Amino acid sequence: MQAGQKLGIVYIGKAGGKHKYSLLDEKDIHLVKRFRFEAKVDVNKDGNGANIFAYAFDLSREETSGCYFHEYIWERHCGGVAPGFRVSHKNGVTVDNRLNNLCVTPSSPSKNSKVQFSHMESAINNNCGSEPRDDQRLYWMAVSRLPPFDAEHEHFMNLNYKCYNANGEQVMEEDDTLSFYECHYPPCCKIETELREFSICGQCQQVRYCGPLCQERDWPSHKKYCKEKAKQRISYDVFPER
Image (cartoon, rainbow, N blue to C red):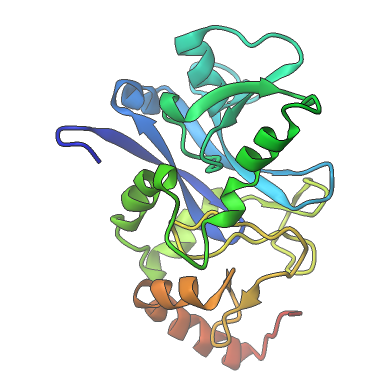
């Protein structure tokens, strides 16, 4: 992060088994007062996992007036998007909504652009098990500095927790057999491409990780919650399908 650079980070809710945040430019921070945010899960139509986006509701309008926040940011600063195109995230982090991280790409890439387009869209799957790429470091740095949620605050934060099944349909409660999980380590945005692909925490049986490195990094923040959930699980004899 450059000296004097200011960014905004807003909590957007819980999805994929973890709390999610969106990164904003300083000039867009004031928009937080205008919108209510949710973490929205979009299941890829090609069957290759899912993505999580910041979805915004204008507080001055009806509840149905929601929009993808990255599309709103682009249109606010750059104008509308022509038919056949969409707003994408350059670094693959679909909640990093800084204008410099957004670009317009074809909705259906041509043969000549498929390689470049595929690389950008799959970038998010290459940031785990090692250090993040250079264009992902800003998001990693911002989220890593946030304080972890205390276990006693989980109930309050879960009031706005929406669960989605593999068809992208909202369900009443989380079903481990039908939900895509994102790696629980906060900065890592890698999400399952297949159901139950990631390893589950052996103690609490509540969260999943894309690999042992992310699980090790997350342990200082996760251990208190983990131990309390483990006690509850043993008391109620509840075991999820792995």
